[in-house]
View: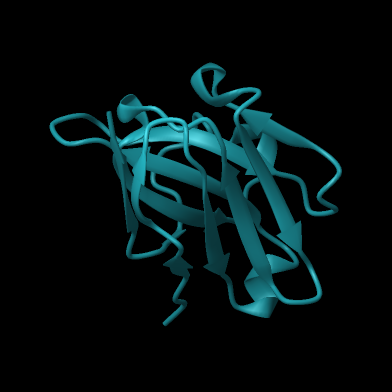
Length: 125
């Protein structure tokens, strides 16, 4: 069973930063689109960011552009989400996902194949 493992969540004050990490099995990481999603209490899960296989290109949802940076370390099969200038509305459970489809379509693709268990991010005002 493929398992993605997130880490790095926690409690931070408004304006602070956190860095999330996601470990992905090597065979998956080198061939699948990968992305971050989040789900706030009482809301639907939403796309946050995705990144190309080389790491040179990324896509972000508008609300995090300029504040969040997605990256990947192909040597360590790990993906990161650097979150700066965090706001209370960023409070959510954050999930990493991987899917055979390209990173360019993951924001609108239903039923992605692999998911992590989630890591909680709480931003206090």
